[in-house]
Length: 308
Ligand SMILES: O=C(O)C(=O)Cc1ccccc1
Image (tube, rainbow, N blue to C red):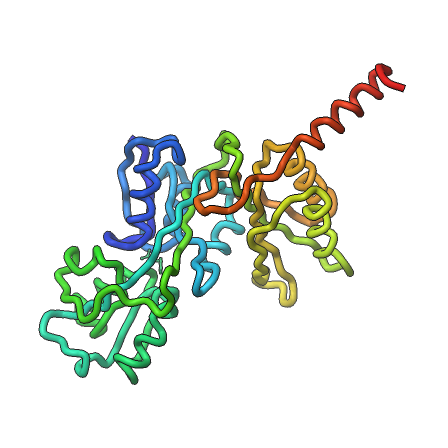
């Protein structure tokens, strides 16, 4: 049975995400799998790199706080991995405490930084003055509260029961309809076939030259490729140098996407392919190959002497 690592411990939103991915076996090609919690995103990805796990499910971005930078960095460094599926979860939080703790007793509150950020206003109003600290995941925060290391945790609704905690407040979210996107990542292998509504993700190092980023963006614009996300991250150890994470509509098997990627490969210092997979949102279609295929056929005819 395939073994899938997820950002644990048990009861995280990431565990819910991987369950949702498995329920839709067309997205993953998997009907069943053993789910194994990992201590951090980096540990989950490294377990896939080493072959100890077959895949990993990790959070990549949310609509309130943006990208999960630790995931991005862990995907850009180390042996290459590719995403084969994504899913999006609406996220609302429970504020969990040990039984008997009242709001006025809460001095310290802990969770994953993205969870704390998504209830910031609620905390200011309802638990003002409580000191905040970060954990590697929402369930790691539940463990910290259970073990007496903090008074309250911002968690997924699954965590209260799993860790024997009480709900101080349920269904908390500063922004209604906030969603988090998760990726299922594997070692490079067969790319999932195009569905007509796919997303491709790459990370590029443009090099330090005037217009180098504009050139990258132009390669997409010229071919009608719609970017869905662009984000820069520092290249650690080289102050002032960045790499760009680019998500766009389309699949590497499509001619216009392939041409855009080949152009990046020619112009950029480094290009890492991070996967083409079916889109989980209502985003538009992948763009059309028709004009590119027709032009390629026309060129082939000229080259073979079939057309003047
Ligand atoms: O999966 C979790 O529980 C995490 O800690 C990551 C996270 C944090 C906030 C929103 C969604 C996922």
